[in-house]
Each structure stands twice: as structure tokens, then as C-alpha cells.
Image (cartoon, rainbow, N blue to C red):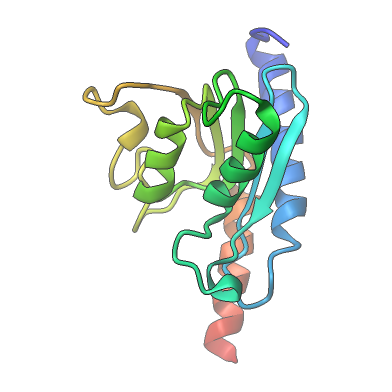
Length: 161
């Protein structure tokens, strides 16, 4: 797919985030609705995932980690996802940001910023820290309102229920 000019890249990022939002819509009802999609360097979908922490009883079953595991099985480079792009509806936490760095992901695109636990610029910046061995390109705030609305609606329903 190569490097796209900025307007084309922004359009592709929005289209991919729409896909991640659709994936987030399939999150089990007990879990926070987050969707993640991993794209190959050629733009093919390698994996999709939602949060499954509550439904699976697994503290590591965040959408990003589940998607990385699935993508690594398909990408055929062991655990490395070099050149791949991860698109996720919510800014990754420190665990997920560390997993993205460890997987050697080339690019991260996220939707809503997470001011309490975000580790890609909000609270920490794990993915761009000068001490990390692998750095990736990061684009945040893609379809931010739509992604934030997912979270707001989920937690509003919890407070009312």
C-alpha cells in the first residue's frame, strides 16, 4: 500500500475506524465496547477483536491484545507485525501500548483519547518514549466523537442501570 498522501491517508484512517467502530458494536454486553482491527502492510484485515476481559475473566483480554494475538498467527513472521497498522476505537492503556511496541507494529490509529489510562499521549506516551526499542507512527483522534460516544453511552447505561 505504501505511504499515502495526507488527504488519502486521512480518508483511509476514517474508513478503517468505521470498521473498528462496527467491530466495537459486537463487544459482549458486559465488556467496555472497544474494537480493534489489525491491517497488513498491504491493507488486508489480519484480525479483529473486541474487549473480552469480563466475558473471558482475563485481565489481558483487551481488544488490542486479542487482535495482536490473532494477527500474529496469520501474518507468518512469528510474533512480529512489522509494517502492520492497528486501528482501535480507544487510546491504548500501558499494557496494550507495550504489546504494540513489543509486536513491532508500524502504525497505530486510535479514536477517543483516554484521559485516565491512555498510554499513547494522554497520561503516558509508551509508544513514543525515547527509551523504547521500537517506535511507531501514531494518529489519534480519528472519528473521536463517534468513538467517545460509544464509551459515554456504555457508562451512562451502567449508571442508570
